[in-house]
Length: 61
Image (cartoon, rainbow, N blue to C red; front, side, top):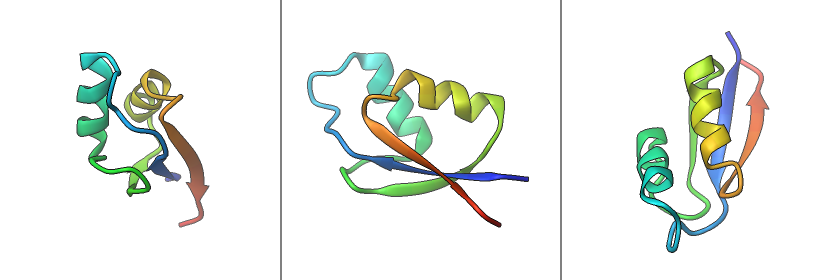
């Protein structure tokens, strides 16, 4: 199964509450913090919500 590395690149200050909640659900708290999540529809939906705040890379596993 594919894995995605998600890195927060912009601050959540000034964003909507649902975007802040989504970052928290992904496990992101600080700028330049990275997490690895499985590539599934739920994770893709989270990424879509905060696409302007994060970068995404596919990790070979």
